[in-house]
Amino acid sequence: MGIGLLLLLIIVAIVSLYSNPLEATEEASLSRVVQEINSDNVDLVEVNQNELLITLRDSGTKLTALKESATSVTETLVNLGVAEDRMSQLSLTINKPSGAGFWASTLLPILLPFLLLGGFLWFMMRGAQNASNQALGFGQTRSRPVEADQKKRTTFADVAGNQEAKNELLEIVEFLKHPKKFQKMGARIPKGVLLVGVPGTGKTLMARAVAGEADVPFFSISGSEFVEMFVGVGASRVRDLFKKVKQNAPAILFIDEMDAVGRHRGAGLGGGHDEREQTLNQILVEMDGFEQNEQTIVIAATNRPDVLDPALLRPGRFDRQVTLDLPDIKERAAILKIHSKLVPLRKQVDLRNTAERTPGFSGADLANLVNEAAILAARQNKHQVSQHHLEESIEKVLLGPEKRSRIFSQKEKDITAYHEAGHAIVAYHSPDTDPIRKISIVSRGHAGGYTLKLPEEDKHLHTRTGFFSELAVLMGGYTAELLKFKELTTGASNDLRQATKLARSIVTDYGMSELGPMTFGHKEEYVFLGKELHEARNYSESTASKIDEQISQLLTTAQKKAEQILIAHRDQLELISGTLIANETINQTQFKDLMTGHTSPAPTAARKASIKPDKAARPDTNKDNPVTDPSPSPAPA
Image (cartoon, rainbow, N blue to C red; front, side, top):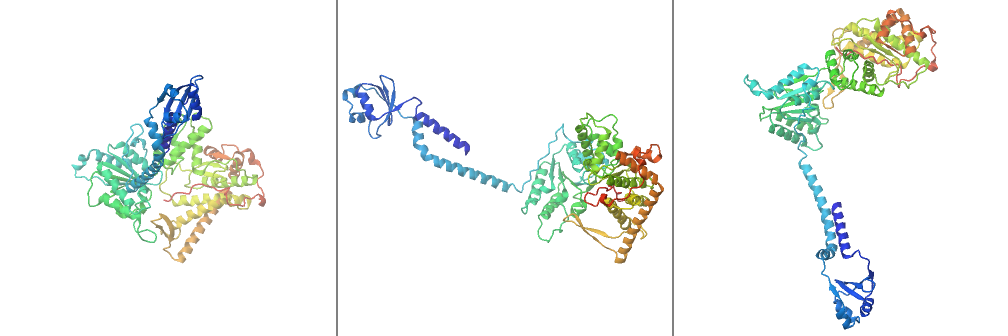
């Protein structure tokens, strides 16, 4: 409409310029024109319809005058008194009217309203047509085959770890490339492969690697794209998607976040019709329904296989479930090497040492770790990433950035130092515990200080001795505060919470208490929500009382064990706490040297041995938990 109006204005301007010449003219009355003619001062008279253009002889001035439209120019002049002899001598020129100007001046005032109305109606009809097209295509999927870029494509060489999963998927790719090789042996191609793993283990990355390795069309879609607000849209999109995949067969279809549409049926709140269930029904029919399909493979990814419908997991639909585990030390080192290809590392960087310090990290965590190290080096205007940057990034990923701006009083600093020293001393003298990597009283995240304990190798099984030692370590900070200051603070609240949780697991989940080899309680989850709602008790009230007694007994025993260790090694407690107050941090090597006597005490170690607690200086809030120890609790066996 804007372009049409602009063109209309241009036409009007052209017509106006054409009808009104740019030459300078003077308007005059017909009586003056008659007077000039009678005085023989007119050289030429041009007639343009009702307009007269008179050129004077003496001065060359041009006059314009208007005549009546019903009479001719000669009749008008004679009636006004022009002499006949002057009329016969007059040079008179009649110009033929322009066709464009005539029609423009005649039709434009009539057609302009209709043109504007027609343009408005066309604009409205075009919008309605687009809306109609969108409504008709609402049940169609927008998924298209993924075109692999030879320069940017992902292959299995870019995926470290999970070798068994790669072998399973390579078999699928080979089956699509060379189907006759397997058909000769009577083998049937798997219809579905379900990738299962915790978030960050590389399920989507593995699917992209399949797309890079396969020479067949690869379709990718998310499970959330099937479910819309209108009934039947999800099922319609499933039919349309599988139709496109079958047209390009042999092909691979990847569905990310399968639990978005594949949850257990019949779990809707309040009953009634569920659009998600109809979408799932259509997926089940397409994968293994009445029509057989031997050239389409569905690869799905989820981190919640427990909520998927059993009909989806049966053979014939998802024939294989490939589990992607968290990487071990070797795999973490390989993943770090892949993610650091584009990062300039110093020659002294030991990725194996970084892998040892990151147990439980997923591939996504390790990628974030390398990125944080690169950002830290850039902020410090360094040209290469050093080992220090990687170690700092580990602590940042685990606990958050340092909060140097948070200022504690000297009293709170002393309490935090003894608290963390208590954890470290008990861990050093307890069996089956992880080595101390770092002790710090610099605030990070929600913690005012922390004692970082990390294993030297991955642990898949945990012993009863290790659990009891961990309880004592968790109680070490609590006990050190009580032993030194004869007072408790809110800083031990997180330690007590973790110790209580671990003690309950020892009793109810692992069967390591005096109640015998028995588990208690059953956690129920609501499949539709995917969250734990409550824990069903499968034991009596008297058993519940015994469980509480056992938990209390375990915590009391752990506290007594920590107290015995700290009393027996009081000199080490003073040494470590004094060094922390002076230097704020102690690394693994310094800690070993201090414990073995290879390092002289810190200058502040000779300060007063006892400080009377000051109630006014006590941290009396649990909002920020200033002296919480965030040492990770052991994973379930």
